[in-house]
Amino acid sequence: METICKLLNISYPIFQGGMAWVATHSIASAVSNAGGLGIIAAGHAPADWVRKEIRACKEKTNKPFGVNVMLLSPYVEEVIQVILEEKVQVVTTGAGNPGKYMDALKAAGIKVIPVVPSVALAKRMERCGADAVIAEGCESGGHIGELTTMTLVPQVVDAVSIPVIAAGGIADGRGMAAAFMLGASGVQIGTRFLVAEECDIPASYKERVIKASDIDAVVTGRSTGHPVRCLRNQLTRSLQKIEKEGGSEEEFNKLGVGALRRAAIEGDMQTGSVLAGQIAGMITKEQTTEEIIQELMLGVKEKLNLQVNGINA
Ligand code: TUI
Image (tube, rainbow, N blue to C red; front, side, top):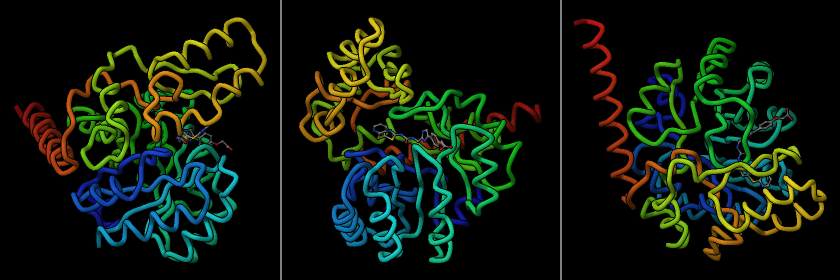
């Protein structure tokens, strides 16, 4: 717990997930100001958008923050260049292997923390110089791997000696405490920050997350090799129908084009891809980022004290 805070010069071991089209400078600066690590998601955005967001974040906070690089983006090379020029403190990566960018980022003194869905990739990342890894279970929203947080985190912890951040299915102090019990040094939280006041998404998106039940976050795209978890709606029903009836990949992909944007920018909760994790069912209200982080820290301390007392009793 202490190691990751010292490494990144943050107060609390809480990363905000790099959610494409959602995690702008607004939520990122709020999380960093509240003592966690705010993260701007580059997603599929062009490099000039990323530069603007980094500069806006610097205006709003003096604390460290990160940029998440989505490795399937066509703009990866330019985004990495912007990150180097702007001297961002931390880079997290998703949806691929960031190996070829590692040397340049490390040479610029940037801390690199890749998301890994497996032990093999965690080991590879440690070998090529990652400062920590984020072990993300398939409870997460968005693009997911095969393993759950409960099974992935301890296996990655055993396999590497760098700090491991747990992600997927964590939204309160209990989940955080559980992650520490599995050997994690910190947590990454996405879904709960969707409903932060400083999270600039349409009200319809926040209402949909608040309304979600435990079984509303479904996975589509397993058959195409790009499984994505999002909240049930007209889009997921159409995608599931195509998958079930063995429709073409072209037909499937056509529905997905622009779907992230439709949900997160336009607030279209029917044909948009409303990315959220399985823990959405537990989220009941909008709060300030500061309140969320304070509640998480109070909750985790209470649980960890109970644990120590339980053992001592
Ligand atoms: O990246 C995410 N979550 C995301 S990215 C995203 S945008 C998107 N849009 C359309 C299609 C796909 C994505 C929405 N949500 N989470 C981190 C994450 N990384 N989950 C899984 C992985 C991952 C998968 C394979 C990381 C590395 C990896 O390596 C494969 C290899 O090349 O070794």
